[in-house]
Image (tube, rainbow, N blue to C red):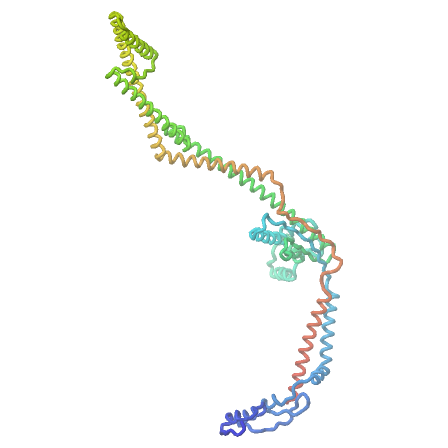
Length: 502
């Protein structure tokens, strides 16, 4: 800066300038290098001025390119640019004139979606679309189209021996190792040629498949495109029919196997039942039997309690002679009780009458004793019958208890476990057999359809060729020629400037 102390170091003095410039920096660098100021001669810039030898000085003193210098360079290289442009136009015209026109016919196929709109169904539809596209491109579909339209006889698709194969055969013949003449199958070669003109793609995110075929013949391209669509639909129906036949055979095999397994399980159940001497294998039946036996046991217990009560009342009658405590079921006992009550009533009436005769009282008393003796006899007989009935009831009660215990032991045994396993197998295989029969019936009489795949619109013969595209060919040729011309012009100008600097 002004007024500041300068040092001997030129780099320090450089920063003391008031306004450092590019020229001052270059001079500083030259001073540090020790080159000094040297003038150059014999070098000219683009505008004709002399240029120094020092590249640092030259880079900053050379006249930068201007519009005038650029236009001058264009005028000097106009011939090169025009030649390249003309060559590009000539190349485009040659391609357009000598290229064989190709006609592309399109046909669209629509694949209906599966039921539902969730992500899984959409993914399934996308997979089905890709699968159908690959099936259209398959050799099987292509071979069907070739056979339908007899494409192997057309010059466009006729098989031709390659030059390399012919050369190899010639060399083998010269070497004496020619292979025996065997008729080669031309179909693979024809399939390869036909598939070169085929293009199959999904249209965006739709359920449409676009089938495009290119050929030198407008009508033939439409015919082949439609033939591909028909062949794919026919192949899909054939695959569906084959899958249906395979499914029916599979279901029949599964049904026969399930039926055999069910029969084996039923035989096992019967064998186990014969071994146990029982006829019930269902747990519900065992529960019903156990419940019935428990109810029967309860009734027997109540009956035994009632019989014991009767015996206790008879014992009380035997001790007291009180007939009011007993209840006899026999008609003779009831008649004796009635007569005994009537006799006691008469005796009581006579005794209450004044002047009753002792003979009458004695006769009634004897009659009462006779009736009481007869009643005691009937009571003893009834007691004997009740005791017998009580013993029978107790025996039945023990028998029912034994049956319940046997059922409980039977349910807890390994035989019962094996029986239940065999029974479950029988139920399972019987259910599977019925299910397979139902599926078999449905599959046999199901309508034949292929995933709602149908042709939206048939291909029509195109009126204009799809290739070569004149505008595209011309644009590419002109762009290429411009780039080449600019490159050649730039190289020419660079060499001119280099010569001018020497």
